[in-house]
Image (tube, rainbow, N blue to C red; front, side, top):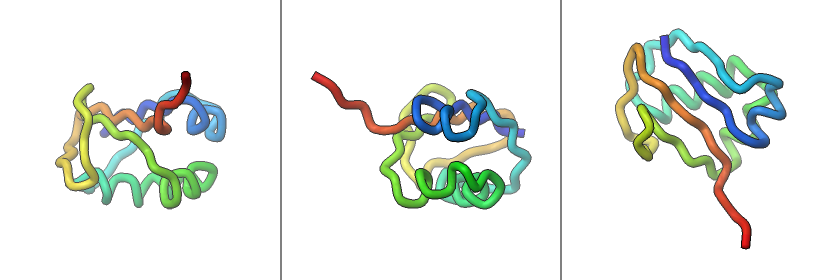
Length: 81
């Protein structure tokens, strides 16, 4: 099982800050595709947004590996002034 932490608009859309996902995905992009399928409220933000992703508190790319027991955080881009 992979723990998914949602922040900002993602958390607001899903109504929860954490998801638990059972997956066979081996990479971040595969995991994101699965989340988009299983959580329709997040699909548009995942497929058309520019998310920042971290795996075990380290920024990750879509090609980064994920495995059982990992913690993945999904965050919208930061902005402000």
